Image (tube, rainbow, N blue to C red):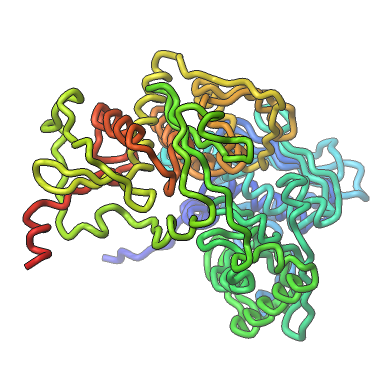
Length: 601
């Protein structure tokens, strides 16, 4: 019996949709790119319920005729290619209409479109690949696509969509990628009936500043490279704009966003020894190459692109960024060899239960003017104090270690630690115990203490807050805004006083007590980095409390007095889990007596 048969078009379209339409952001990407291919100068995007309920993309492009509107939803229909060779010379985002069958296969789609030389337009409805109706209508020039109930006929796909905040964040990410590379086009984004983002036509640098804020725009310098293989232009951030997480890094080729780790290494190579290890600089770099020398079809999302001359382009990019650095003098902004000696902090212990703060030393500071303060070593010998300081885990230098069973820890009054403790390299507190030598990471210990304290205060709505004499400003990108709005209730519960100013800006009028002196924008950006997943509200609160505790904790290298070490250890052993930080990193390690004896044999 024959068992091989052709699939119905509706099933084939759903399979194709699985490759192209992965989430609401995929629909918006395809429709926005179609609008740009049609010559639109204004593109408006409207989403309801993070795209689950409705997505609408309106453009003022050239529109489609009645026949084209119908054919655009047929498989393999296109206005861009006629033969296979054309695939290698395309300069547009896609084949007008090629993605429409995939969208229509998994949603209810209504299209209204009109060309400039026509008095009437066309209104067309398709539902799950099934043609419903087509009739003349009165509408504006261009195209108006409305996509409703995405994945309505594939419940399993709809079920596995992420939370609204995550899906909306992905939508904003696709939106800003397209907006960045098309600065001459106006864009707007409306979310649940409220205008979220409006980007009028501007220059390239103006568009970057409009999307990510003027502060980032002011930190960029021009990069331009001309060669026979490619033209590279764009902007790279100065070394002082580097950050550990969340740096805005974008490559585009022929108007298309791409990921390219190999070219990323070229940019970072140009900044060798100019930024601290582990930090990243922002960049926005645009490649213009012969389409025949690249392959954009190695992945369904077309974000991975293969170049014919990658090694040569790597050298061109490296040389171009280095030349721009030298031309602007940015290379001199970081000079670690000749950097002046930093001021050492003075460590202050507040009343028990209030935590630790780092008080900067000044000519007027003295033991008498700063009560309950232990002054650090003199500035002249600070190199000796920090010699050999590393960020390695405690267990890395322990020949043998064992976890202390939580249930076996005695009550605080019984003091499971001796009073003859001392500090090692400004990072570890060492003391003898009945089983050997105990080592405690002071920074991690304080994270555990603060995490427990903040968690309890949140439960009782008693987190202390301090007002700011001069409010600080926070600025968030369109991609970050929905994530930050989801965090607002948690931040308010932790003592933040935040006032929205519109356009992704917020005024900070108050902070949790003990958080003064922190770079708030960097702190918030790092928090939002962890908000990409669809975790429950409880886990979001835990992540936020942990981020605050990590920022408020005493730093590595902070000199402690004996009284301060004693207080820190007492609070640690009274915490919920002295052995580990809330994110599972070890706080203590034990070098047992047998291992110590073995060292001297």
